[in-house]
Image (cartoon, rainbow over all chains, first blue to last red; front, top):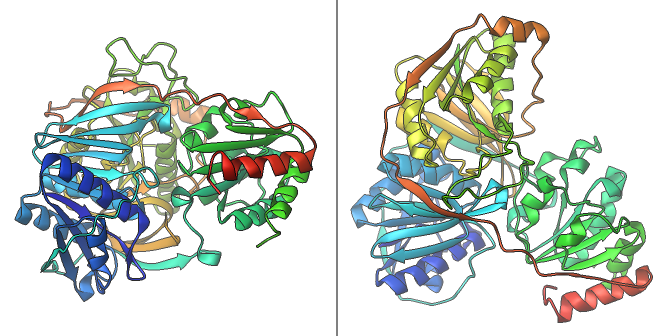
Length: 319
Length: 249
């Protein structure tokens, strides 16, 4: 069995979880095995949503002690589920939670772990993973040597496919609540925006933005496109008051949106490592020799302070 | 307080990646080796705690001969002692975590700090694995850390905002850029480092749970096109292409 840890939000599967589950279904069909989805929390309503993406079995761990995420608590829950179901593959999405939990689970089980994979294959029970190294400057093929195999899937890479099932439902016993570390609260950021790593459209600014206040232009364009705003390291380090959380690049976020619009970004190795996997790249820069143009699907040599507002206006203003 | 800082030596992040003749590793020619950037934040945090409340700081690394230079630098920055666990790099985070756990077990560390991810391997796995092997609390990708009596409060970036994690000490904390501003070693520190102990241990070989069978460079992107005309013409052309050709908006 392939077990997939699924995160819920507002009674629905989060998109990165739907992606992992869809990929599990594809692997399972090719290998002739079953797919189990695990959800955990104080309120698991919406867990049935996993059936849409091909879960044959939905395991629900619903208990007050699971209201907040705990690395060690969830590890105990999941390790017991993997063992009880005799699962050979465990997948989660490489979200903040997935990347915190999955390696701990692999260590609990004493098995191999591949992080942030962009391709998977399952042959005779052995998982083969494709994953970026050196922030995407190389791609590795990884082979597992253990009978159970744990991997996290990179968001925005695996397509979501609906293949509805009539799943069996099963309740899992919750672990005891003497957890060593627990998430106490979420300090929400303004607007509750989409996370950079999960965004379909990113409008990013670099040193060419000249000032933090000018990022308003990018916010307007991002809003018109339904995207989010990112920044290069040069912009974050420039002392313009941009948070590190906005940084795209080797020492920031690695993103792979459908559309990445780079404004006033020269395209250093460090930046490209974070966004080179984007499907369509647009570069707007006044320097025709900027390396970003080598990467760009569409390049505009020009003044971003003219072009960006023009794009926003053509899209019908701010909305 | 006793703090362990685990460091990894990695290729300079500006390194142009070339695949070695074996097809499964990085060609080490022309590679400049540095301390993993996120580990610098781990080291800095340990030194700040040492300065604020007093602590013994031990720097540890799993690696080969050239790793000594990085550990000397850690001593120059302010670590009290350093330990090199000699082992081959396999690319398997579990074996690295096992080496570190075998060393740390029973030594009474209150806090174990590591960068949240080693540049290159990009797994971000050794911290959580180490926490598990030692049966400790963990907080990963931390941008703010406060210590109390036998407990900690950490902030980390997560989807939708900043998560606040509270847990008990001892704990494993993995650090993210933004936690602090790492210092440079002083001349006095560099001279003083020569007198500090740098212990070497032989790592016990463990079977890798995962291995890399091939490395390839990502496929080159197809040639793009430049859009001509004034800003209005460029903007109109771009939106049309994004809608009709690329179909992304």
